[in-house]
Image (cartoon, rainbow, N blue to C red; front, side, top):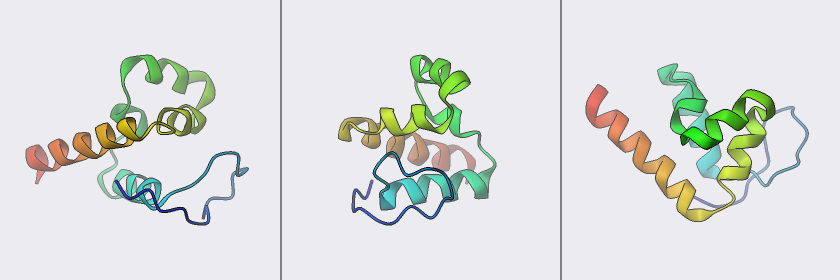
Amino acid sequence: MDVTLMLDPREAPHIHEFRVGDAAVFMLHRITNEPLEEILPDDVKKQWETRGIYAYFTYVEKRKNREKIQLWWKDWMKENL
């Protein structure tokens, strides 16, 4: 997952650093209609209920978690395309 910083195109408050990989995740979500919370582990899914997208950004602060999301999408593509 590309960790290059970029300007956050969303209109939400810019609390977290936004990266090219985040844009890719959001575009894949839009294209596939796959719920964003489905790419997250169960403990983060629970946080999603109260924190929404901020649960995602906290999760991807660790590079290894970004790699897990990338693998999740690769697996999804193998199964669905």
